[in-house]
Amino acid sequence: MNIKCCTYIDNLSYKKSYKSPLGIIYMRSDGENLTGLWFESSRDVSKHSYNFEEKDLPIFDETSRWLDIYFSGKNPDFTPKYKIENLTPFRSQVIDIMNKIPYGKTVTYNDIAKEIAQNRGIEKMSAQAVGGAVGWNPICIIVPCHRVVGTNGSLTGYGGGIQNKVKLLEIENNDMSKFTIPKKGTAI
Image 1 (cartoon, one colour):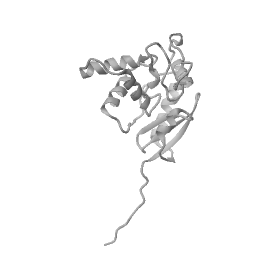
Image 2 (cartoon, one colour; image 1 turned 180 degrees about the vertical axis):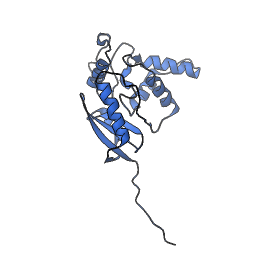
Image 3 (cartoon, helix red, strand yellow; image 1 turned 90 degrees about the vertical axis):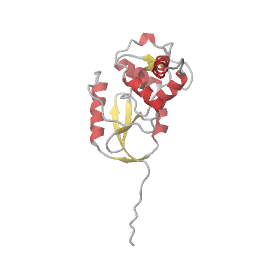
Image 4 (cartoon, helix red, strand yellow; image 1 turned 30 degrees about the vertical axis):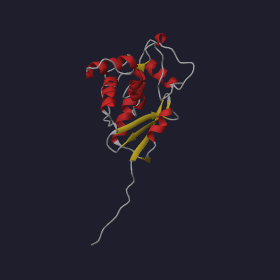
């Protein structure tokens, strides 16, 4: 019996960079779907430690086109095909709600918690748990976690950096006078 063996690289992903007005953004793919999108040198880098191979892929071209439209100040009329790995039912609910936040609008962590509690038929859901699920999101901008703010208008909890959250909300023509930037903490 002749057995052929091959080497398998666990979690091989493809990566490409995109030059945005806010700096370098990295795209990750499984070869077909977008599986990650994050700012260089952000807290989110730790979510994306995989074996990467630099490669041009159609999904990267589609994502770059989406980002070009977005950074020109327009709302793209399509969404690149993406897949989110390790998606729990709770995270899925949070992602679904974030995807319904209109361009140029924001919701609070508490708003999301109330919607999930209502959908589940329970009295209360933790806004902190929602914050954890929002912060876990591996695909920034396209899955619009930057549109989730604190109840008091605090621009907290953005793994891509608070300065980038401010800029993304400005691109979408939000009224920035209703928001505050934390003076200290992990969100800065």
